[in-house]
Each structure stands twice: as structure tokens, then as C-alpha cells.
Image (cartoon, rainbow, N blue to C red; front, side, top):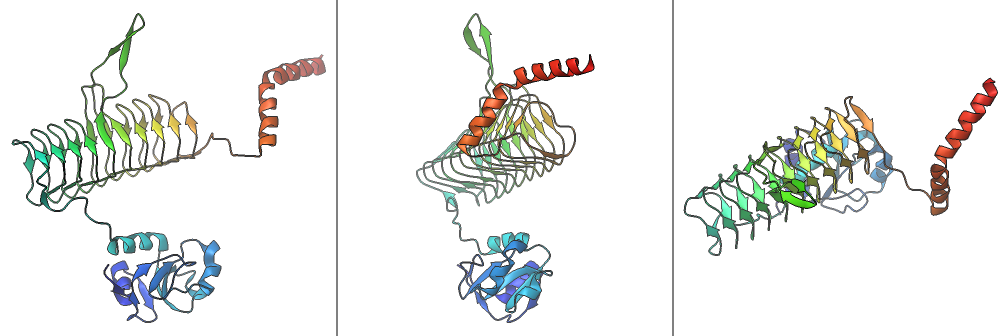
Length: 340
């Protein structure tokens, strides 16, 4: 791990430095768990009291919170973003594969692999695939026929990319993610399921991140499209012909059914389910465990998940819910009686 002086960190972050610029920083830590040689950050003012007790050698703070820490500090506009950028500089995550082609990898003679790319152990690169400069293909990964992977894109182990998928530059795919598997398309003939071959593909833009064990299905006729600067968490299901526009974030275990369109800069919480053929406009936030059964046409925050309560209270609420129809009928009868 490379150590940085505090003055180097301030320069990297474009921040104001107050204190000892020669301090050597070895690690980023939380305010509560930091020790000497660590730098911590305050991103939420409700933890401001921890500035008084932290053992960190320095902190990253906003201008509004700088007065509450007497030690060395770097002052930034957004401490959380600055923490993210510093974490990138100090990141010790290894490559998914060393540069070059591992002897156990299988690369088809018609595939084009950049000399600067890395192909890990037991990886398979099929015919006419194109692997860009500095791309990393992790061990046991499968790259199907005619796949295109852009420069700087990194696949961890056991990632599967089916045929004809196109992936842009500087993307990140976590382990066991699957891109281009068949969409769930079937016709029913007198009780027998007739499979509909999925003839579209998946097109993924630049700087897209896909979480572990997430699946993105190929389109039935047109393509499934994930635009640039989209982040998708672990164990999500993106069905055929979905389109997710730029800047959108999707949290874990969310399901987008077929032909859903998600606008730009949306935030979709964990375990959300969106019915097929729905559209969500730009700038929408959907809180966790919500069920979207009709299109959303206005920006804002939407919820439908039921917050937890005690089991006793929940049972009472459900009992009342089951009686809503009867209560509605009785209320109408009372209203009619009152008017007579």
C-alpha cells in the first residue's frame, strides 16, 4: 500500500489544507475506529461529536464542520465524494488477472485480444470476440462469439458474457454476473410451452458497474440497453428489452421485468419489483421493497413497501385490512342513511 502525506492528499483532492502537511497517512478509517496514521472523514453532521474523540491523525471535513476539529484537516466541498476519490487512490484491490494470456485459457484463433489485455486461468474467449486495451478477464470467465469488450473493462472470476454482447470502456463486472442470457420468452400451444429464441442482444455503455450474481437478459428482437454511468448492485434481474438510462443506480435484489424503461438519474432501492412494459421518468427515487404496477411520469419519491412493526400490531392491521370491503359497505350505508 502506498502511503501519502497530508499535503499530497490535499493536492489530490483539490482541497484546503490546515495543519501538518508532512503527516504520513497509511489508511482511511472511520472516526470511531481510526488510529495514528489514519485519515477519517465526516460526511454526516450527526456524527460531529466523534471529532472530539477520534484518534485519527487527520480528517476530511466540510467548511461548516472544520471549526469542530482542532487537529490537521483537509477541507472540501463534499467529504463523502472526497473520501470516495481518496479511496480510489489508496485502493489495494488486485487485478482480476495478470497481463497476458494464461496458459490454461482458451482463445479462439479468430478472437482479437489486445496485447495489454489480461486473460485469466481457464477463461474461454470464443470466435471473433474483441478484447480491448487493458481489459481484464478473470479466471473461469466465458466470453461468447462476437462479443466486444472495451478498453479498461474488468471482469472478475466466473463472469459469463453470451454471444454478440457489446460492452463499453471502464466497466466493472463482479463475480458470477451473467450478461446476454435468454430472456423469458415463451408461447403456449395447448398447454405446451414453445420457446421463443431471443434474437436481440445486450448493449452496455461506458463506466457501468454490475454486481455479483446479477443477470441481464438479451432482448427478444431488439436489444436490452444499459447506458453509460449506470450502477447495478448484486443479485438483480434485468429482463429482456429493458432500457436503463444514464446515471441511474439500482440496489440489490431488484427485478425489472421485460420491456421496462428507466429514465436518467433514478435511484431504485433494494428488492423493488417493476412490472413489465412500465416506464419510469427521469429523476425518480423508488424506496426499497416497492412494487411498481403502473408507469411513473413525474419525478419524485415513490414507496409501497410496508415498514415493519411488532407482530401483534401487524396482525391487527392485517385483520382490519381483510375487513376493508365490509367496512366500506357499512360506511356507504351509514352515509346513505344520514342523507335520508
